[in-house]
Length: 217
Image (cartoon, rainbow, N blue to C red; front, side):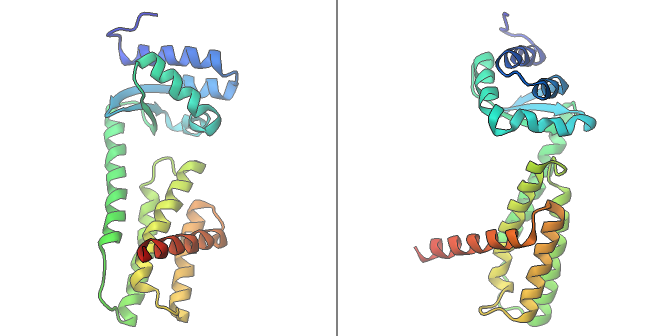
């Protein structure tokens, strides 16, 4: 198939045909057929899925298929492109997706730059409440939050924000109030991500140890 100067949809259609030949999996085929090529933006091939087909997206980006998808895209387009799956079918949906991503990044940056001096117990209590509310807002801004990978991205972002907040809100040694406040935030992340709170707490401890080692160096 000659593709020089062809529309984006034709390039993606060629990819779909090649991928069907290389991966014999009906769920994967159905996921490919449900996609719409929206645009290429800074090395990203944006593929849209209608709301009712969003759950199919995991078949395209899961580990067992992602490397084949990347290889075929490079072969057809003549350049490596990262795939981004979004809910929608038009450029306006991509712009909205980027805006949400920017808001998530801003929330994270805001948490990283917040360094209260020495909060009083009442201020600390209010700050823990702010962190709790922040976790709720963060979840609503995560793309594909209904899918396992979306929940994982949310938990990852949330733990880094929480790690930073603990620098000013979590005394050493921690008191009863701080422990209960931390547990409440972890439960909030757990409810949204469907990851058990003890597992989140374990990952948080690993992050704290890593950050402590980085600081020591």
